[in-house]
Image (cartoon, rainbow, N blue to C red; front, side, top):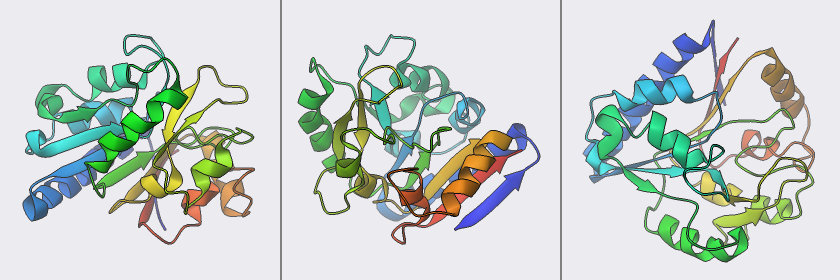
Amino acid sequence: MEILEFENTSALDIALAEQVAESLQADINASGSASLVVSGGRTPMGFFHLLSQQDLDWSAVTVALADERWVDNQHKDSNEKLVRENLLINNAVKANFIAAKNAAADALDGEADLEQSLAAVGQFTVVILGMGDDGHTASLFPEAETLALGLDMNSGRTAIAVTPPEAPHQRISMTLPRLLDTQQVVIHISGAGKQTVLKAAREGDDVAELPIRAVLNQQIAPLKIYWAK
């Protein structure tokens, strides 16, 4: 695990955008394509804008979401809407995008379609995860009924429906084994509050209490933590 601390979010966004672009281009050079998994929320907005301006062969890049609320892609809470408006612009408008929300009426009914789409991608180049104040990452929430399935490394599953105990909207989320099937995992956080949660997560091992621990404690994918004060 490598922890990179920055004085402010602007410095972090610049460094992360450059690092991700470098990783994507390296994978394109090596294999002809690259893939990026991103998360929603306010934290990555500045990073998205900077990354969208990076000069690389975006037509060879596939972008996917770690998780999504089961809402229309024009809904204000849609991660797809956020990504389309803040990342898939400028140079990155040429990127391919895998929508997590599909035509199914219910996230449970939409699992198979997303799993099929993800199977076509193979190993990801970079996975960027956020972290909630409750220690959730993607939509792997503490006390969610499907949390154990989402964290099970031997489930054979790559996407599951999730109903958060408190947060609004049904969700669909990549599972832990799918998120870790990547060349690089990044946890992107900012602020003293998130640092407190991260410290607590690093000091324990109960993944059901703080699911982010499953990412911190794994030995499968290289992990970097980008944190702005």
